[in-house]
Image (cartoon, rainbow over all chains, first blue to last red):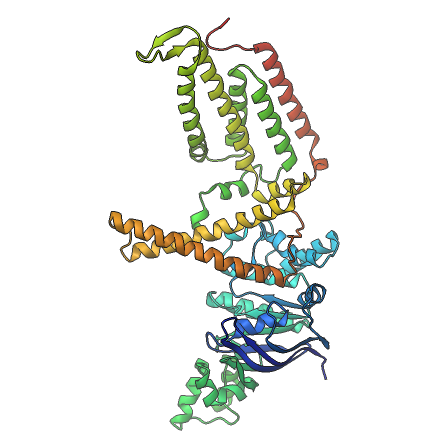
Length: 279
Length: 266
């Protein structure tokens, strides 16, 4: 049994005007997992994420990082932020430095590491995201996908235990989106725990098999891709839809052309395996 | 991004001198400006202007048209003030305007020439630094000479967000024009007003969210940065020799030429 690395207990958060944004979430992340949080716009995903490293202090409830309850004093916050890295949705919100190199170095410098170590980490992080040759460019000279990669590197260089990404594929072209997801998948393979929010239902089944559906500040359902997508009620309530491949098989099923046991295939790969034997 | 292709920022990062030691450039420019001010003759600033222009156009390879556009505004102002100065000199007039006793005097013309050429020399020297050096390296120098961190931090953030808001402003402006904004005078006024206020609100929101993003990476009031600068110790011997030669040449010119000017005034 893997170790629990992040735990959220009965989290509530109200906006200053009294609106309830998070209405009691229990959430548990084990080391090495890759978790997707699916939910419509305004479900509270971003607000939820900002609790993980103490940017937002909950109205009630607990955030527990590696078995230690998060306190909101300066020192504990710094520690939490080094362990849980949050990549923001819009890279322009995150990139602030005049060059890529300086931006990626910002996090590790704040952790008080010595300069050689910081340089090593920056080079390593840029290498991982494939942006080494851009290290002396200014952020405003990069494309959207490149900025995304740099903001991921900015978190990677802090070597967090958990990386949280808010809509990492939004605003990217299809190739760019797949490349980012593949990158996250590879990072996860190397042992990094990853939490991703998205509403790209076609991409999710390819990379993650642990899905939480968030709606109106509550987790509606938690389970594997098949469990979640076969629950029509949940899919409908959360303004999601079946992946296109799944819809195709649903139609086959409805018209009694082809019925497969154990739910609809959700990715091209699964569909290929399922159909290979039938044709 | 295309809209930044022909800007100062683009050229600072893509010229032949981008990667040269920043201190070589800074020392050269400071000396050039000091010598430029120490001289009493318009010829020395002109020499400095020629040297800097050659450096900018032929060594750094900044396009000619861009350099001209860069120099046009300061030189326009210098020309205007030069004309006024020429009329303000004392001494016997060589040409009278015809009222209030205003006229051109030899002293005035000398003064005007000196001021104009000093502006020419000073702006071209400063232009050499500005056109060939990426901003982040200049920030690194700020840090090394112990400019207060608040100032450097603010400058760094401003530098980054100027481009962001430039982009936002351009997008909003285009979307206003798409919906027939700016078609009449009154409409132009209201469109501009709403553009300005919306950009202001966006800066406010951006400030909030940027703070959150910085805090996520451990920010607590000071931008701890690993600066991407050079050390004064890394300056090559060649750079030192060139700077020394430059100083010797200019100092010699200052001594030999003295106060030489268009008119000899006793």
